[in-house]
Image (cartoon, rainbow, N blue to C red):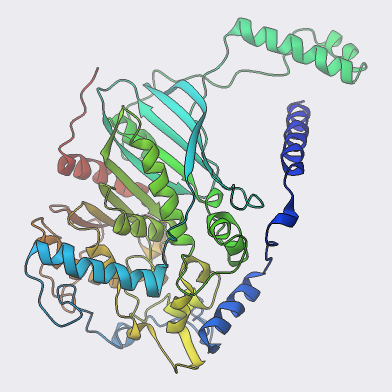
Length: 516
């Protein structure tokens, strides 16, 4: 019966969509280009003059082309670009030099060679509140909003982009409150939708039974045999006797218990996570359905753009402290969270989980995942087209590797300074594969510390000698500074680190939960 109701709604939505599409005269616009991921990558290779890319290594250690896991061979070019030396060789010794000279140089290189540029003509986003609901999460009263960010597609109506976001704020604390924005691939849902009263539920079931009997008169006899049966039932209500959240509770409950809010973004409503989608989504909308140029943005930068537009909305919410909005993600979304934090200085802090290559792990390291793993596999669409150059074996410009990049991930972390930035990993034994190169990420975090210290805040509290510093034991957090590191003993998640992240962040933000 629930399926029948869903079917009726789907038909209504279908006809609404058809009506909207009928008013678009597609002949007025350039036709949408439809490529497979292979075709799109080949098109970019042709633009760049690349004839052959090196294949990425296999994560399976029994394969002949397996990834390198020998530390003795992991650093073919161990000397990293110096964060505090400008292109013309001058040492950066003041914060003024950092903001006016060195940081803009790094931003330019990362945009051109790795993540791509956000076009100047990206259309405006208008946020629509679809649902506002007063709910309970455990014992905590919250207000939950489902929001849609409608992107203006009047210049090219053949592509629609509607960003899906859910915002949840505690109602038992005095605001404004910090908020952690989280990337995800599943549609965000309201945490505990408020339920109709028993009297209202009876009215709903009476009307629903009448509707079904009109559609199928034989159902009257069925309902007569079971007069007390209610096709639609209430969901379980809030558990006011539930124990207080602990370190094992879902991260969202831990945030709410600490007086934080959270919001979740569905990345696929911003940009698809595949190469075939590059002529759709926000990238395709701006390009009017055509292919990218080599320095155009990839999916990571597009997701980061979506997070920035969500922050635009949060700046209008009186219960949100917009200067204390953080960004979080794991794996590819850990990469996106780091890119977001690096490029948009409005974000107050970041939790970067298990991000690997394209995130915190050094590009020039050859341990597990390699530049070739992203450039010549399913992840090339995350990056700008120019990134393919560093996996090139044969081309008009010769052969290049990750060692030829002018920038690396320690400098991406440096772009987050002086804001609190927490780097999180798990352990290979529980599923946070050594493919991610935890050691390479620790080296990058150590090296990034010099920028944090230049700007007057604390780093990991170790030296910045990335070639000699050893990664601390599992469960040993380096949490005394604005730059933090902790490797938990779980898998490919950052959930076990929320118990440490929340008090660390609250302390640095000088936020104390105050009950109403």
